[in-house]
Image 1: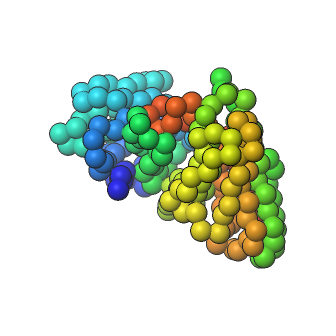
Image 2: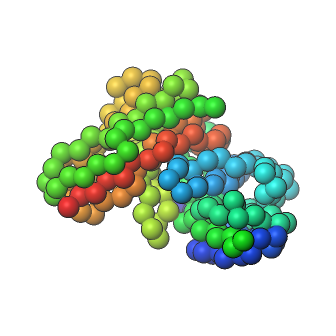
Length: 112
Length: 113
């Protein structure tokens, strides 16, 4: 079955640091890949999506590139802010399917 | 922005109790989902539906029932609640399924004592 692995369970950075959260997936076919963000007390929110090899998704300064060769969709941001502190989820879904598979989540804490 | 509303926001019950969690979406979406969120496990799919009267089993369905009464309303039922079902529950909706974005509610925190 499909699976999504986020390497980092927790990441702690200072403001203006560079962020990388690693996401690798295992799935048949050509799934769509997603990043969601969850702020305290809220439900997850869609950040962005990519659906084909080498496609870059981006939003709010975050970006990730679909890499079918390495089965990866790593999240990056050049300069984090304290307001980016949240839990980030990588996910995959098939266009003809109904189920979205989530990774375990990465808690990002940004110190002022 | 699409709206998904869950109720209640918090619920406390005892072991063996009967609990119903409610979810309403006003997006005219076809798909609705129930997830549970636990530390160390992320988001896990309990049940989902692609229309009124339809129900599909998710990845962690044991101990849960669900019912989709209308296009808008999706309920999660715990008929004999156990402490292992203490969790944060999220409802979500989507127009065409897993290839497009999901819209989540704010969650229901359930404690089973």
